[in-house]
Length: 115
Image (cartoon, rainbow, N blue to C red; front, top):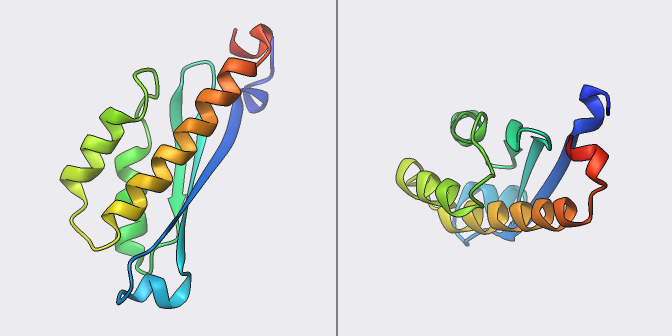
């Protein structure tokens, strides 16, 4: 059985930010990182490169504790509802990319890692 830290795997997604917002001036792309407990499929931590602490915290608070068992679409619907900033489409794209990486990882993971 893997150690608890071995069950936690980090995934990231990146997407181009729209022009004319502060985050674009700082980063050009948004990075979204999620730490997943691969046994429970729960998001343990989340972070992103938005310009304000309020926005970063809101995205993190929204994602932490959510499950990936039903794929990314339930998370996309939540973000679409609770985030009304200009970077919404970029956040959703980055989230989908990170979730796709998780799905690919899970398909190739050793069975012992998922137990």
